[in-house]
Image 1: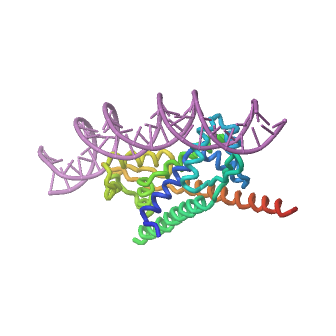
Image 2 (image 1 turned 90 degrees about the vertical axis):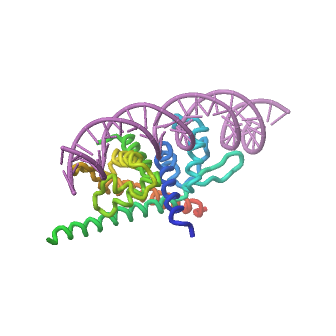
Length: 111
Length: 111
DNA sequence: GTCATGGGCAACCTCCTGGTTGCCTATGGA
DNA sequence: TCCATAGGCAACCAGGAGGTTGCCCATGAC
């Protein structure tokens, strides 16, 4: 079982990986389910293939994407698990805030 | 109505703001609903007040937090709306991926 | 065999980020 | 009134992020 600190760190890493316009764009292309080569992913980005490769590596490091080699090209596909994880965390935060605020309000009106 | 590019940029900014361990910690403290002063938020962080201030400004810039001046101190509170927004986006991504993958699978097995 | 294509590696550059320190202002309490 | 406390502002610094270029290797098409 990973420590709480490690979990926090991993979560922050995932958000950081999502915190870039280019990477969000790459992710969007991959939500179609079809694994795409780096060359395909570079199309329409105004960026070098190298830059895209770096972004993909960032996404891969946090596990939101993985690559499979197919001949001379390596195809990237999305792994939604870290995303679902992050989504659930955000849901938890807003829900926690919701109930806490309701409790505070009740406390005030209790006078 | 903000342009699609602006929306994408804003979304990336929110994720970037969440992509830091310290800031996730600050956010966690604020989910209790009670607005906290900078001094209070600095407690237990191993950081300078200035550093915490900077982090708070980052969170404020993307709208996930706002400040209210109360006498000589300024209290920060959470605004869950951008968080809910991000959460819904992640949900959308994973759901989109889900259905797309099912469609792909069906296509393959159709042979 | 030859050549275009897909991609890896490394060096390099610039700018932003996270953090510190120093100093100044203002407010609230004794 | 005097002093501790809450913050703001600016300068500064080290390191990391994003991007490019150059060069090399492998694979697939012809």
